[in-house]
Length: 366
Image (cartoon, rainbow, N blue to C red):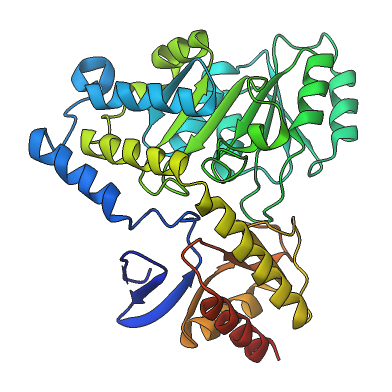
């Protein structure tokens, strides 16, 4: 654990040293936006600091209801429900909608919260190779009429590789086999799609995913998470998702701040354009020093797989000493032998930041 002082931008202080941050998920540069801070301060001056209770007891306030309505409008669904974190949203929702007589089909590289939610549900779990739709189809066909309910659970954008699940093909398979679809949109919400509505918009299947989870602490720049879908789904989760029922609501000032952040996401599409431009520039510069990275050419999660854990840690430490903070990711976050630098691009980076990082990577790896 290292102490970090953040401001508005990607240059920060870590343990008293100035570094450029290429490790956070603040893709749109909103975590330090003063407009969002002002919205929170204004809400604090007219309301309480805490919600005081779980929402089903006495914790629901107007700001929470308004934010849920705005999230549902933004994502194009009937309703939405707030959770304290993405982890809480996934474990609470999956175990609420799947049980002992059900089966869950999970991508091999799903996020840990999806894995844990599936385990807690006590449903049968079938793991298919990463984005292998042919294998998924075979599993679904083999399980015909064997279970009460079938749920396909995937990430929209995978947090370590940065690749995007082909949701149009997934929706077609789910319909063919009468399965439900569950998409973790944590790293896509606010970023993918013309309007930033996420992986469903990007893949042209808005309104066709049964359950969508998204987070507010990444591109949106605040904190918390949500699940959205039909009115029936949300009413059900209010009464069955344990991580919602037994948790004190988030401070209403954070809901007010998030409403301002979502307004910025919708009204400033140039942020997404600049993010993709920065991603393309970084990937082009990495190719110049002999390091091609997986994912789409404008993908904003840029992994460089180094293999060994010790080497990855050493490279990450050396880059930090050179003034650049990148994710040095080892097992269990990634499989054995897949340790990597996880570089994330922000709209707040400029060409000088990127050139400096690439030069430092070249020097360290050579």
